[in-house]
Image 1 (cartoon, rainbow, N blue to C red):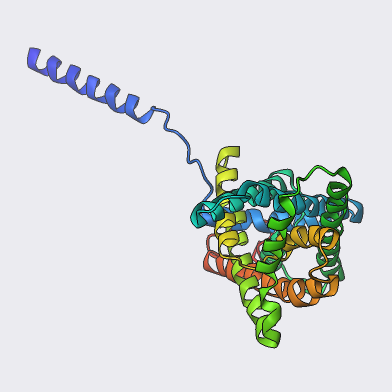
Image 2 (image 1 turned 180 degrees about the horizontal axis):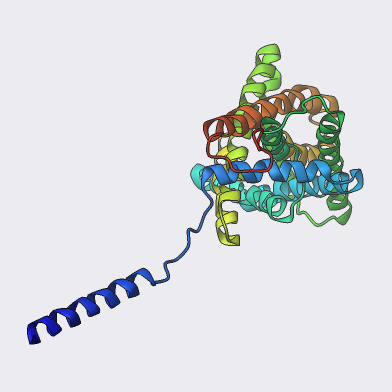
Amino acid sequence: MADHEENNNENHEHTEDSSQKEGVDRPGRQFYIPSQIVDNFGEKGRDHLNKPFRAQFLLALTAGSFMTFGAIFSILLATGVETQGLYYLLSGLGFAAGYAMVFISGAVLFTEVNVLLPSYLFNKAGLMKMNIYKFWVTTYVGNLIGAFVVAVFIQLSGSLSETFYPELSMYLDHKMKFLDYGVKGWFEILVSGILANWLIGMAAFLTTAARDITGKILGTTLPVVLFVAGNFQHSAANMGYFSMGILASDQYTWYEYIFFNLLPASIGNLIGGAILVSLLFSYAYKEDIQTSLGKNK
């Protein structure tokens, strides 16, 4: 009898221990899984598309302005640095500040739209709706104007030291080196643009995955440092550099910036963001996507 009671006590204690273990609060996952990220892309693309034109344009202006601030900061941080690896790191960190402001503020950047809208379109019919293409154009033009307006303000402020401008000239030469190769250079920029927006698409991917501000900034920074170090041609980033270049230097003309860099880079950016990030992950995770955007929902 005593043995029976002792066994009951032991079983009761074991049950309590199990219950306590089951009741332990475990920390939640600190990031979203890929299918959730693709969901978020599509829903964010839909939300941007449904905003009134006024909001779309203002948010595009804001994003463009952050590109010029990022370009300025990337040059200022790296000025005078002789060690190449450290130079690329500081330059990339400077530009990451611009992208962090874009992603966290909800501003609308052309190269981010190249990831968000295809995610929306892939999960919902209606590719021929004119408001989609109007939004794309609005974003691009807004980014360009925003970048240039901030460059004008910076020049009028007289805030930058004389050491800034030789460094800017070097950046411009680095980005316009393809000009010497004619048609071959034009296509090299296009391919470089594909790589650039592949990386920026992954910056958006990692930023969306993070659930806190520190994770979002870090997720933005790593791919941005890589695309800056690799001199991959990113149209929105180049808008910032070229806006300063037009105002501060006569080494290149505005049509050289547009037709021999921004145009092929933009085409490449569209391909890189839409196909290598948005559609690739949308197709890979289509069975796992749980969203109101889904075709079968």
